[in-house]
Length: 108
Image 1 (cartoon, rainbow, N blue to C red):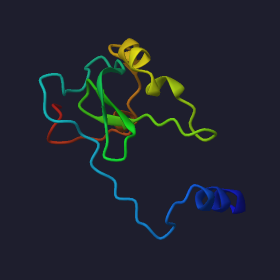
Image 2 (image 1 turned 120 degrees about the vertical axis):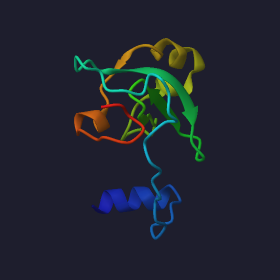
Image 3 (image 1 turned 90 degrees about the vertical axis):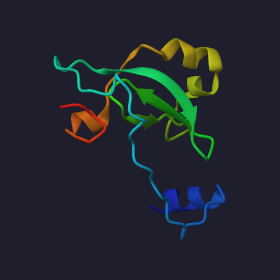
Image 4 (image 1 turned 60 degrees about the vertical axis):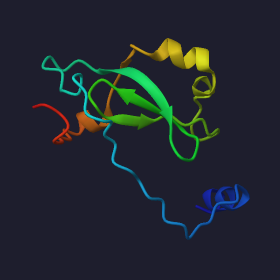
């Protein structure tokens, strides 16, 4: 616990700041429906959030942050445009779908 606290302090974070999470649903699209054969979703694109972190847009309609914050999260490829393009169309196991999250934005 002390190590995490020291790391947060050294990164200049306001420890009293409440982290506000946005809903993890992309805008409605024709592809925003569950795969009937339970295949993983695929990455359809990327965008950056208001803090500059990369977010994967998934074929199921959900989104997933893909941060590169070593040593906690090592995804250096998200910083390289060419490597992000290579990931489009690749399978991606959506954690929201695995939890059975259903939304009005997704077909049943």
